[in-house]
Image (cartoon, rainbow, N blue to C red; front, side):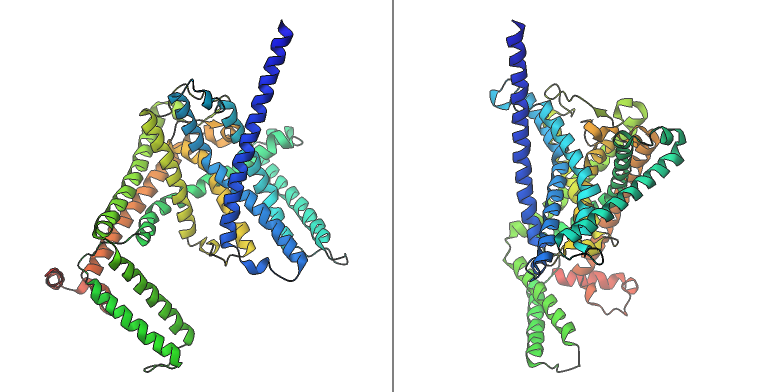
Length: 492
């Protein structure tokens, strides 16, 4: 009687494994297609339509590797949201036949696959793509794709030895005995230690980019929406823009300026700016009163509410760290999905956690590209070089792979880290986690206060027409009576 039961158990395990593999493959195919469409939208087509077939082949291979890496990055972003939502779905439908495929084994497998592919992409695939595009083959060898492949393999091997040597030196400085004992333990010690350092770098990068991105989200959203008219004569502003656009167009057509001799390129840029300003004014004029007077304030209030909720959750987590040991981020081996909600507010709290995690990721990307250090990496539609695409993929992979650790460290969710994500050496250090939460709350609050004060000041200056003053006139020297008179005249 035991043999048939053993066979049925093995068959069930086999079917479960096949089902999980099919689901993972289908999910990866969807992410790969989306990533390919995104990269195709930004890549420079001239690099892939060149006459040299060798360069075109190399660029296509590098593009495929970048697409694979971007799909892994999107998968890393979706890890926590999918895990939290899966737990809530199993809580709502515990006995549903159609939800049997959604289990802890599938979620754990997704975490392990993302961890493996993110390591593979960051350590091997993206460096290979960069060196492959820059290689030309060894001197004296026959030119071709294989010669460039050999050179890339040698350079990548030397780089691997250099990185492993640096990791061994760092581990020897921190713990000399452990470094000697694990000199030949590459898979169990050095690679996890290397990725632990990379994850710490990613979490620190998120600490710098996310507060900046949270403050920049207001201006980015403001450019996408129609602002309300505050003490502004839109018809007069639009007439001035149309008059200036017509004047610049006439000067560009005639090739000469009526008043001063200016550079044609400067004149053309000025014409494009005025044209964009005129189009924006037309959009504002065509907007309905509801869209103009209600949409923008509601969007700003929603962003402010979400940001304040993030700060309050982090502040609560700081207090929780002082009195509750379970608040520390840790890993778990067997996720018990469907047993209990990971939020004290049930499904509503879980939905808020998912929204906050995605909002923090979007804010970190906005803050990353808004930083002066990384402005040069900002992609442009149909005008992004392959080297810039590789750099963007590296940056997004570092940010996205650190997002689960980042969210758990700040206490945004109580869903513990699965697989190797919970084995980082620094996660158990109370001082690092506590200081990280304090810095995030402080930096976010400072950026938010600074953004709100400057935004209010800028809108008041535009409302009273002070932005049209000459640069030699100091706005601080203008009497208050003049400001009030100017404002009252505009209202009347």
